[in-house]
Amino acid sequence: MTLELIGAGFGRTGTWSTFAALNRLGFPSYHMQEVIINKANKGHLDFWRKVANSPPGSQHDWNRVFANYKATVDNPGCCVWRELMAAYPHAKVLLTLHPRGAEAWYDSTIDTIYFTENVWQFKVLEWLTPFGRKFGDMSRKLVWGRTLKGVMDDRNKAVARYNAYIDEVKAAVSPERLLVFKVTDGWGPLCDFLGVPLPNEPFPNLNDRASIKKIIRDMIVGSYVMLAGVALAIALAVGGLWWWLG
Image (cartoon, rainbow, N blue to C red; front, side, top):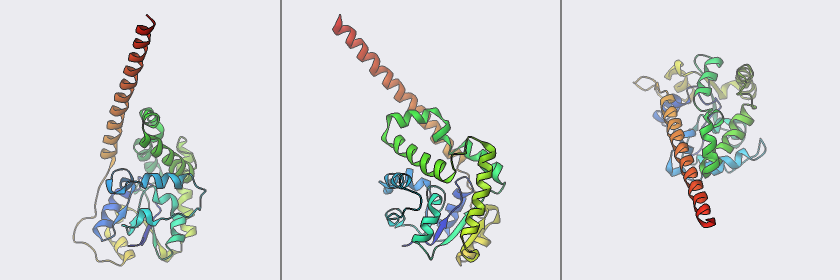
């Protein structure tokens, strides 16, 4: 199996619904959930962390993560769309856009996947867990740093970056190789682009905001439990020291 479709669109641009649609069309797809949830992909986070800590444009053994997939959408694949175009010269490129524009994309991103940067409890997980350190390092450098240029804390700059990025992709990809797509466009443009029949069912309308919010809530609870454990360990250590000194 080889990569046939490279998703260049940012996360929170309908990538969850597009992911489901591509799977339905016979294009097993890679998405951030494949990195952090799919237990069969052990080692993928380490791979992407290595990518994040390599110079932009570096080539890697992409088949290590894409061997079982025909398409990739969402982070982290969208962060290396140029590198993937070079590695898979016959693959097409899909640029997903938020149906309601850059402002809505920004609000959605800040409210969900930006938790690695704006939720202090995640910093606790970074401090206390290997997963937190790896995921925080990867997302900070590859997603928020390299791709989004470190502008997410400034709404106007982030919106400008979103719009500039669209122009960058359009300028770099030949029109016959590129589909600029919104999930509200439905099956038609996507199926025409991929050369597959139209399914006799509605286009997926999935919003993973609730799932992400649950992950954040679980993370917050976990961080509090860890902090309580650290506090208890410190208290016991101090108590033991006082007992020994006494």
